[in-house]
Length: 185
Image (tube, rainbow, N blue to C red):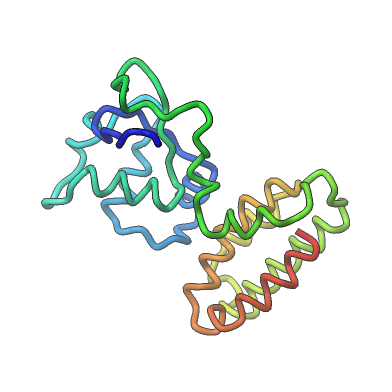
């Protein structure tokens, strides 16, 4: 069992989910949490990010929130203490997110055809437009449209699922939509 991380000593970098979150704001992060996410660059430790926190917020809580959401990952480096480094076999934070677990049961990405990718892309765009409303999630639609590979579609899936769950009708229909999407994703 790995030791507890000293979040002040660890260096953080964004995951694909974190990069997507900056573009789409699909997870609905609090402003201060989002601010820290934007500042994470793969070079700063928690201690170096702390001065950017204001209003009584705690950098440890913010970093833990970002880790829990799968937006950031820790890196081993000179600034990380020996006990704080993650073991080489530790799973990436993306694997810990609920939607990543859902994707784990899908066929390997290389097994999907270009036609299936196009079907998945169209399904995601159409569901956003019909449930949330046209032109309501422009950046999400843009990201889905430009996701050409299965891996890219599976990365943008997280923002799609978060957007759907933020809408009352989307929340009701998400299990049905997910089942249909997973046939081609």
